[in-house]
Amino acid sequence: MDVGLEKLNYSFRDKPLLIGGKAMEYYGLRPAGADIDLVVSRYDHDELRKRYPGHIKDIYGDIGICEYGFEIWNQICRFDYDCLKTGAVEERDLLVVSLEKLLFLKALAIEQEKCYRDVRLIVKEILRRQYE
Image (cartoon, rainbow, N blue to C red; front, top):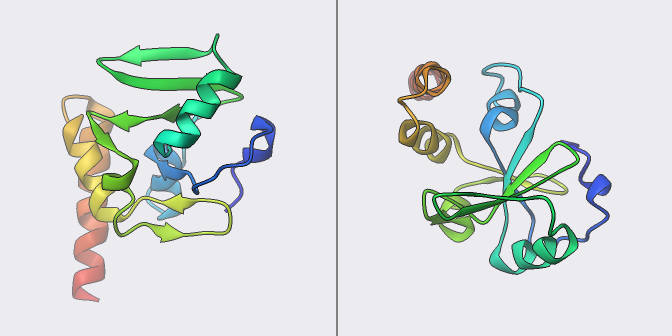
């Protein structure tokens, strides 16, 4: 799966973890929106912060680097790369968050209507796979 990581002109030490809408699209659940959400290792996040110091946002301690259509996070609700990569699908240039972890992340934001709809889609897919 190609998400255009080369635009960042950065060589990741650890494969970035794809989350959010692009992960939903990867699993065939719905089309992704415009941005690409990633969670990266602490090392890679520190390096990218140095490279793009003017493109940083802080949401309750989750630090995002927003550049070239990417939102690159150190953590989501204090759940970091090492926690979220468990069970991920390995692709050539990145990891794709597992369906179970994607469900978990969407459940954390279930107050948002889009995330509520995503939770329903993910649960439907998990059950489909279970009964297949």
